[in-house]
Image 1 (cartoon, rainbow, N blue to C red):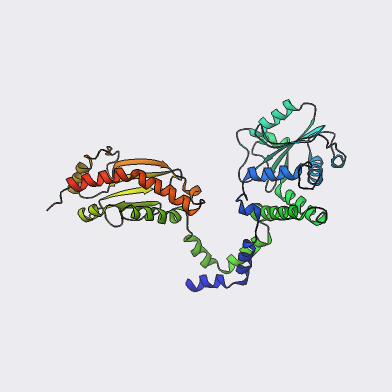
Image 2: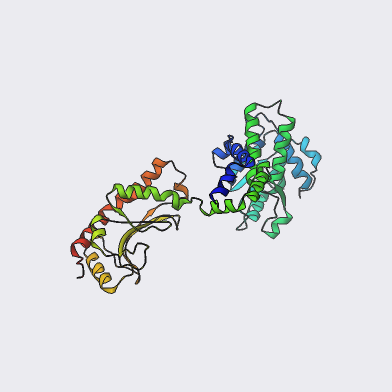
Amino acid sequence: MDRKCASIITDHDFEKIELSLREPNIFRALSVERKELKHSNFIAYVLDPRENHGLKDIVLKKLLRDIFSESKAINRTIFDADYIDLHNIDIRREWRNIDILVILKDDIILIENKVDSTDHSNQLKRYHKIAEEAFPDKHRHFVYLTPFGSDPQDADSRDSYINYSYVQISEIVESILSLYSNSISQKIIFYLSDYLTTVKRELLMNDKLNDLAVKVYNAHKEAFDFILENKPDPATILYPYFEDEIVHAGFVMGSKNKGYVRFTTHELANLLPNTGQGWPNKEVFLFEIEYFWSDKIANVAATIAPCDNDTRDRLHEAARKSKFYKVPAGKKWLVVYRKKFPFVASEIINEDPAEIKREVKRIIEDVKPAVDDISEVIAKNFVKSE
């Protein structure tokens, strides 16, 4: 397997992918590739002829041509887009929860944007009703924007909403880069190029790099599958931070499982037998922090593992004397102390290392008094069997 993995690194196509991914892209840098709100913000920005992008009404008129050619509203055709009155245009974001609302003199364009989700809770019907009540005298055009022009989930809305796609958005951007690159600023060209790459690569999956990735994967499938099986996840990434803080606090690491970090004190490690029937190292008592599986909280517990009845009873009796003791709810695993902390592993891993360290240290420092007290009373009151 080592030789097969090494072959990936020396593959010229793989090297091309690496080099392409290293190219700067503002949308990738901001991690907004699949975030609906951010896409809506950018689309609204380039649609607005009053904004500072220098595109004037180019994007808006191209969009209007597409919409008017498909619109369910009467008295509008593709030819109207080039002659429509754009004075006093108003483009609103999240007005009454509508993603993008373009208000013209005689028309409104209501756009509901969906990247990874679908319409729900009759929202399309609600927006339709809002538009009818708020703009009764205007031509109303309802647009359902998805990566590939999917139908709304709401069957009734399929008759009133135009299916629009990010394929069409990408075509508009491509045409602007092709036709107007000499008349717009270099900075806007960079933004449009980055956005086009983001849409094609992340939403449509039809960028040349996507095709190259498939080619490389097919050539090294076994090696890639092996790598993916061992891909670091939040549990793997965060464990060393917990381990560092636990050892720094003077404790001893215990049995390891994915998403759990377990520890004890030096005194208890030397005192208690390894006759447990639950953890890999057969400990009978450990403190543990479950920090991954809920992805909402870190759950700290002091737990007596399944073991012989005599050891179990004596451990439980000793733990009762701690001021932090709580009556266990279970029968097989006796949790004699528990505390929860807000801790969203999938978000915390995106923080810088110093912030991750602070979050983990906060938990260890908070529970240390309980750990010290519980350990002390067990060490004092647990008597080894002869």
